[in-house]
Amino acid sequence: MSWVTQTLSSSLGRKVIMSLTGLFLSTFLVVHMAGNLQLFKGDGGRAFNEYTYFMTHNPVIMTVSYLLYTSILVHALMALVLTRHNQASRPVDYAYKRPEANSAWSSRNMGILGTVLLIFIVLHMRTFWYEMHFGTVPMAEYDGKQYKDLYKVVEAAFSQWWYVVIYVLSMVALGYHLVHGFQSGFQTMGIRHKKYTPLIEALGTYVFAILIPALFAAMPIYIFLKTNNIIG
Amino acid sequence: MKVNLKVWRQKNNNTAGKLVEYGLDNISPDMSFLEMIDVLNAELIRKGDEPVAFDHDCREGICGMCSMYINGRAHGPQTGATTCQLHMRSFNDGDTIVVEPWRARAFPVIKDLMVDRTAFDRVVQSGGYVSVNTGSAPDANEIAIPRTIADEAMDAAQCIGCGACVAACKNASAMLFVAAKVSHMAVLPQGQAERKIRAERMVAQMDAEGFGACSFTGACSVECPKSISLDHIARMNREYLGAKLTSENV
Image 1 (cartoon, each protein chain N blue to C red):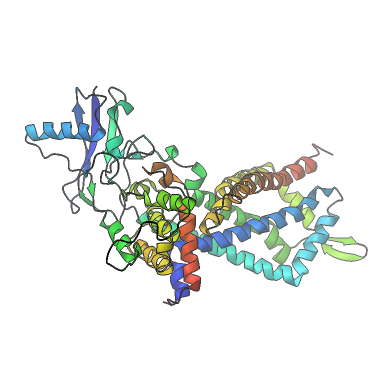
Image 2 (image 1 turned 120 degrees about the vertical axis):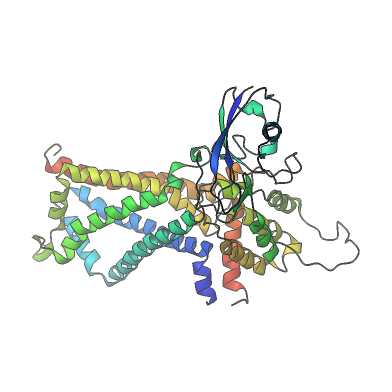
């Protein structure tokens, strides 16, 4: 084995892979959230559709998107490898244990939270990504140019209450996943410092675990209220 | 006071074990947990039964021999203390107390509550040392070490190798133990010569022993009798990754 494969297959190396892919996915969330804020613009979806056109035609974005799909797969598969290894490390379990006395629930259930998120990602990509790339999407015309009207697809999906519920619950899972995952990613990389760790923890908790999932959850709720004429 | 014990009994590593119930009366609240087990064993011997095998040595909280997973916690309900420093006053009269051995693939049960922790010895043998020339003892102040560095090294060196970190971790990971050993020599001038090879070898040996990976739940640090900080795990990760990237060992 070369030193590279040896490093990456060690227990520490595997966690580094989790950390790098996880933190990359976290930065993606910021971009994805910022772009999708255009759903709130109230312009019939024009800004959002122009933004989707840009995202599906810019070569840099398209390259990064493949890196993103790979990261999701690697993060999920490596989690499976690690979970199996960790379970094998304790073949006989305790008859009585009180893990709540020494650790946070989210930190012990990253696998379950991650599975919820993976199912969510599949559903989410089927509804929007698949329709955008392979499905039939209505067209919209702005200034004589044709655009795929993904906004209509968004409206159709989020006008259903159960769909909104799935999204909101998934964002709760995202919050719990990130409240542990974001700061752990830095710990795994050995980044722990009196000056910066409190900042990383605050960023992970208030921005990544609360603000971002809350804004994402607000999108389906807003569209639901709008399409069902509850708000104007 | 009166207690109802459920103790793990297992003849050896090849046979299955089970929890066996024992009732004890007239236990003094001032007894240590181990003394309470001594009372149980005296009764078992009187009745002609096999006494409960358990590890213990100094009984003053510094040797790291006593173990026991008590009521779902490593070393029992107290924090920052070994089982020998746990007293029966921490329990209520009539309590049921479940006592199990450390559970980890790398710590096979020898008998009852005793587990084989030589995996830790092999991890230390793989790199947890500094090579020095023999001869007369060097002058204590020959190498100047700032107080803060000495304190930090001592915080890690406090590790008594009891294995509570492994026992408490949901992954049976030995990261806190190995981190303490890597960390305390990585910060001292004496540890510099073997700094990279130490991190590489000790992590490799830890993996070979079959310990799990770190999920950073923090359970190890909470249950550690010496309250060793998670900072050391971050340092070990830094040491290991730095060593892998820069050492000459391919």
